[in-house]
Length: 392
Image 1: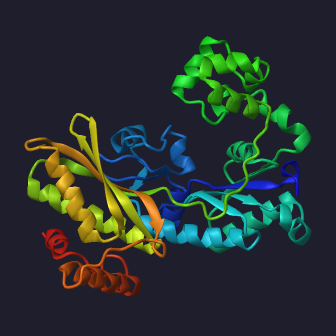
Image 2 (image 1 turned 90 degrees about the vertical axis):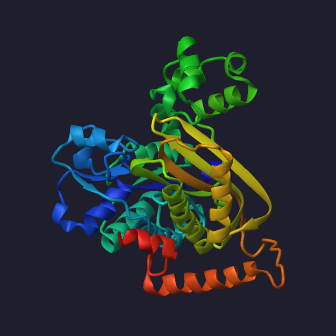
Image 3 (image 1 turned 90 degrees about the horizontal axis):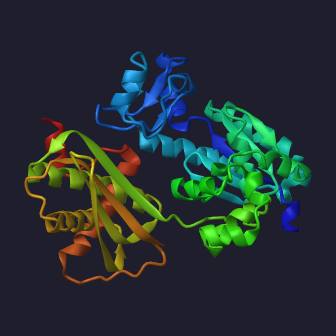
């Protein structure tokens, strides 16, 4: 099938974290609800009742509380969100094998080969929306187009709980009046450059000579924006796109200074992030430590290993070494984070085994721990250091 004849859906869950939280806290249904807790935390999601007050994701919780004093603030439950996301993705796969998840709450679907079975793009989009609503009790919005770029733009303009199809012969009518910031790759810096050139709409870019854009933005960026401005996006839906990184971070209710407290939090983060890593049958070669200080400045440091790992103990020890190497004694720590990069499949990973070493015992213990957690739930098995802390 020629690329211009494809039918692409972009399915985007509506206020996903907040919608799932409303299911878990039905007593707050209809009230302004924000996912994010702690005066020093940030907003992860807000339902549409809360958004009317101007609350948005990534906003400090304390600011959101000032904007909507009567709003309900719910702590996040990432395991729960992952569980619902998995079931939603399973619905997508029942219509097409060509599904490209972008995050827990959105995905591209190429349904070109499913049209004869399930009807046209609108029929499939409606069926997906109905099944998500009936089975998961939440809503989603769907954009339909012949390219990923236009489908994603369309889904953003029919939220919440809507559907918008952009026919091939209406792409430029839809696209050209939009501001340049709607084009992929236009951030603050590029946006300022375009503004200085007097380019404010997508039509302005489309009608600017390509060489002018290349001189202002560079060959690659200039040509990419020019193509998008004419609605040309030939990227295919990528099935099983490799996960690029896994991370976990925690903003503390008070600044940490004591080394024991800091190490305990690093252990907690290592436990959280490696559980996610092993659940996805992945290993990581690069471990990155992120530190945010009380003045909101950030510092990161990474280490790349010769062989990939997935054990909590290994990640914790490396993170602790990275922290000690920064010589931050006396510093007040607002946030800690651990990121795992250069991910490889468990099956394809090369593992160095040292016979007689205690590392093998740790690996066997980790397998037993994972089995216990799978059977009895998250938190059923924890390092003693964390259990002692939680009981205080």
